[in-house]
Length: 432
Image 1: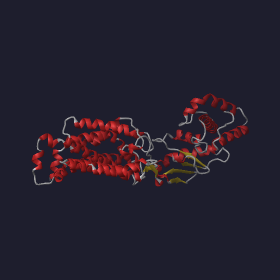
Image 2: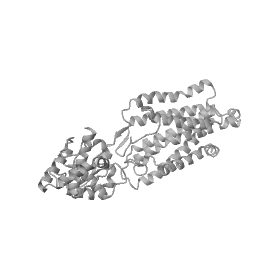
Image 3: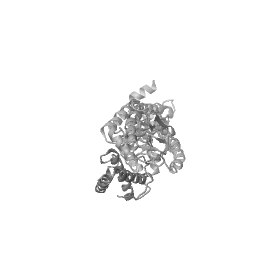
């Protein structure tokens, strides 16, 4: 009954409703990073956790300001001394408020996750359990920051306090996001750190959970602290949280760790073998046709590849022998013709990575374009490496015309040499 009354009286329900509405407005109306990776927020579970946490950059300042407004309510209403005269202890008086805030924010975030989860279930068959604690940290962050705002608002009941706190936190989050390891003290994962084949390191998740729990406990303590000594004591949880989290987070080499289950191969062996990772198992039927057509054309090469295997980008140098690697770097998948051209552009060779200078890299990619053109009979840009076509188009076309002017046997020999350069990552490509 007390909790129900507090929910009606507090600003918590408004913030709880605003949270998913604002989040969905950002996700749908802005071109953010959440739509540019292999783990979109509405197609993969880890993407849902990652990009809803990214929104904390905008949500936490709002939550802090709302918490401060809630915390200053009693003092500005002049009922603080009246409430203090009741038989209940101070912490029991503020407990319903804290519970109302926590319940409303948790419910608001769960609404967002449920909405995204319904969309994800339509496209993703792989369910990584590790996404749950990654998302759970966001709940601790929202509740912790709201309670901290309430505690500060109770100590500083000025009308300007909520907007000032909100703007200050927004500025702080933006700065921390560019500050190396200190950004791990926020829920934000910027850039492309977490993908469909990775998850957040357990040490990062645990440390962040302790940090945000400390923030929340400190905010709760400030809500009922009336003396200087109790206010100082209220800071103890956040200090302890920092003492544990900072040494761990500052020593983290990488936020992400590989997800072995997501990287396991799922294959179609009803014909030439075509494999994708477990995380992309739903895309196997769409890839099989173009991949097998590409393998048929690649069969004209000496020692041709016999299978197509999806490779994780960071493992691009470890393609299995006799396999043509394919990388699913963007979603949705390209149309079948473009996908076939991409596979032909690999010429059955692994990606060489950045093991040579840029000029040599361009020439190797140009060799792939020429070999793909010879296999199809049409010289054209290969999707994904158009930049090399733009830079070396004249050399590519000259080499193509010279190649086509040779007798068929000599053409095959020249193409074999070009492919060998690509397979063994040789920077010097004859004829280019």
